Length: 79
Image 1 (cartoon, rainbow, N blue to C red):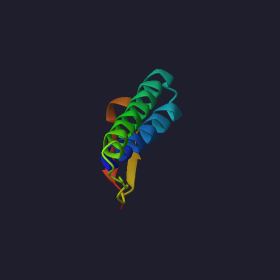
Image 2: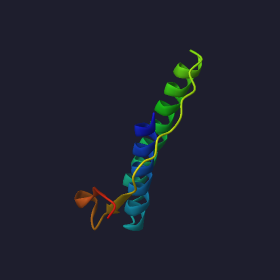
Image 3: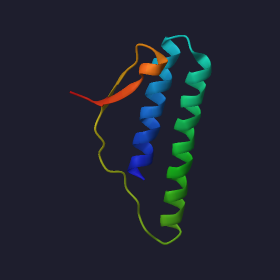
């Protein structure tokens, strides 16, 4: 569940970085991926709470997004 939220944040950051490069179509794709990860997370939460579990989010580490061009997009751990 935490991994889905972390993936959502990474995709959203990529969308922002790509939008700055004035590539709205690619940015929209990254936003859609971000939203899909949230849907996955919600499914995990529902599955667990339907079974009387109490899911919690774990801490995540910050990521640094570097994008000079769409083809060079990459994710690096924060320093």
